Image 1 (tube, helix red, strand yellow):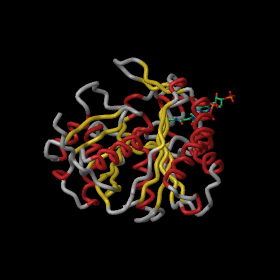
Image 2 (tube, helix red, strand yellow; image 1 turned 90 degrees about the vertical axis):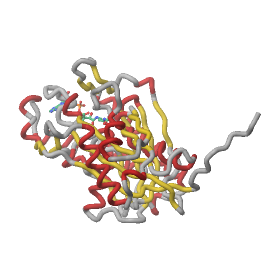
Image 3 (tube, protein in one colour; image 1 turned 180 degrees about the vertical axis):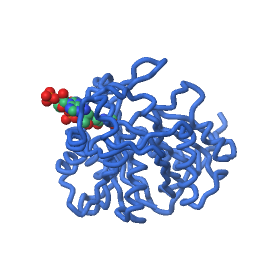
Image 4 (cartoon, protein in one colour; image 1 turned 60 degrees about the vertical axis):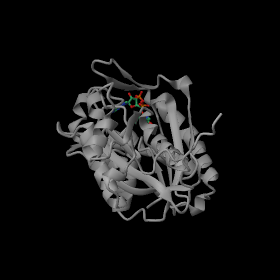
Length: 323
Ligand code: UT7
C-alpha cells in the first residue's frame, strides 16, 4: 500500500478579525407588548431586553452574513480570495438547499471556497469556531470564515408570549487562521438529546419557533456554568485571569446565574448585548463580542470565554484570545 501524502496544518490558530451587522429596524418593547398582553417592565425584568433589531426586506440571511464577513476580513487585513472555507451557522435560512454559505462565498468573491451551513441553533457559532480551529490545524484550510446569522423574525409568532419578545435578527463573523501562539482553546461541547423537543420549529411550510422557556431556562442556568468552567480549565485559564465572559445572549438572568455559579471576579467584563439586540441565536456571541470591542470593554490580547447553548439541546464553549 503506498503511503498517502497529508498536508501539515498550522500548530496554532487564532481569531484574526471580527465583524458584525445589525439590521436597520429598531423595535422597542412598546411595539410588541400589545400582541402578547405583556409590558416593557415584565420583559426587561425577565430577560433584560429593552429593544431588538429586526431585518427589513432587503436584509436577507446572505446579505447580513456578507456584510459582517466583509468587516471581519477588512479588520483581519485579508482579501476574500484568501478564504478557503466558509461556515455559516444558522437556523433561519429557510431554504433547505442550497446552503446560505455557498451564496455568501460567491458574493464575497472567494476563489471557489468550500462552503456549507451547520445547524446547531444558538450553539452554532461556537461549533463553527471549533470546526474552523480543527480545519486550520489539520491543514484542510488556511483561513476559515465563521458566520453566525439569523433572521428569526421570519420564524417568530408575534402573538406567542414565550418567544415574541425574545428572538431577533443580526449577523456576526470571524476569520480564523494560523497563528504563532495559541489563540483558540479546546472546545467543550455536547448535546442533551433527551430534551430534543424543548425548542423546535414547527411546520416546514411556514416554520414557527416554539420553546418551553422555563425548562430551557433551568437547564441553561444550572448546567451551562459547569461547561463554561470546563472550557476555562481545559484552556488552563483561571477565572481571575479571564478578561471577558461572552455567553450566548439568551437572557440576562441566565448570564447572572452563570456568573454567580462560576464565581467570576468583578474584574471580568460580561457581555450584555441582549439589552439592545434581543436573542439572535447563532449571531449573538459575535455580535456581543463586536459590541464589547466597540465600547472599549474588550481589547486586543484579552482572553474571552465563549459559551453557546440552545435547541437540541446543543452546547459548546471555548476560550479565545482577541485579535
Ligand atoms: O436561545 C436559546 C435558548 N433560549 C433560552 O435560553 C431562553 C430560556 N428561557 C427564558 O429566557 C425564559 O423562560 C423566558 C424569558 C422566555 C420567560 O421567562 P420566565 O421567567 O421563565 O417566565 P415563565 O414562563 O415562567 O412565566 C412566568 C409568569 C407566568 O405567570 P404566572 O403563572 O406566574 O402567573 C406567565 O403567564 O409570567 C407570565 N408570562 C408573561 N407575562 C407577561 C409569560 N410570558 C409573559 C409575557 N409577558 N410575555
